[in-house]
Length: 165
Length: 259
Image 1 (cartoon, chains in turn yellow, red):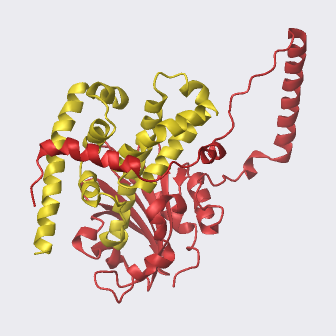
Image 2 (tube, rainbow over the protein chains, first blue to last red):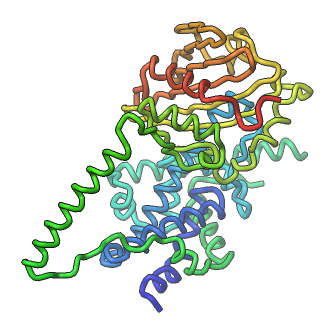
Image 3 (cartoon, chains in turn red, green):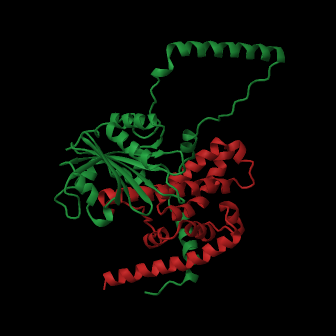
């Protein structure tokens, strides 16, 4: 088997869950991860010599996911002005809809840091290395992100409780 | 139902991640191989220096001859700027026209309709958008409209300007654009306004982060260019923005025309 193929099959299941939580949709996560693997294969001579090729692929995929999120926000602003807010479809995390909605409400960096730490199991130092943030900033995002995510999940539960007596 | 404490978050995310890892299958690596471009690195075979030198001289002579022939066959004045966008410019003549019009004004068009409506947005094609704008539905505009083309253009400063073209039937009036459908949908205060024959161009500023130039004609076609402030700066000047909206309007009607 080609060295890249082994790397692909060995790392795919480790990378996909965190990206799914970040993107809010499995399909979108598969797209951005596919894009990152294609980029890795095109530069495989260089990527394979890195200490952690998996971190490189994750970084490319995360960047792509953030770009997509920003593009969607921009498109949403334009279409809101043109045709109203109701028709803009949002990605849906089918398996964990409540968690998906709550994560989407977090600021970009809080979401990224929470997902990398708790879903991808990276240490604060690794997150700092991959995102370019200082370790102190990563810790601050983690603390604020946990608080906000809990608040958002509780707010959703309260709302659902009011709707369904 | 028990409330979630922030100390529950690590376990919640970790468990979600573990569950997601168990679901679905890994797509075949064949798809990745088929999408990857072949390696762009090419190494010239090593040649003894006399052969390399003579090849270099031959290459320079051939290049000079090709440039001379090219200059005769394709004089500079006739070169039309081609569409720079991906998307469906090739399949959509008005889109390609507008791409050229925007490119000719020095804007790099980085995207157009198809890629703008990527993923979930693809559902919002013209056919599906029209009912949302039907006069029979409450909270929607009284006119039917088609969004035919949306571009994102890049100016000389950081940031992206979104340009779109819409056909209204019946045509919208100046008041429609100035008042907006509801206060939060108004474009802002008028900074400048000019009329040139059938065409009116109005520049709006919402006083915060949005500047919008709208150019429209009495036949119902409208084009707008919207610049959203990013990191404290706008991507384009007001006159560039107006120019962009007018160029998009001049590029013609949407595919299929106004209803």
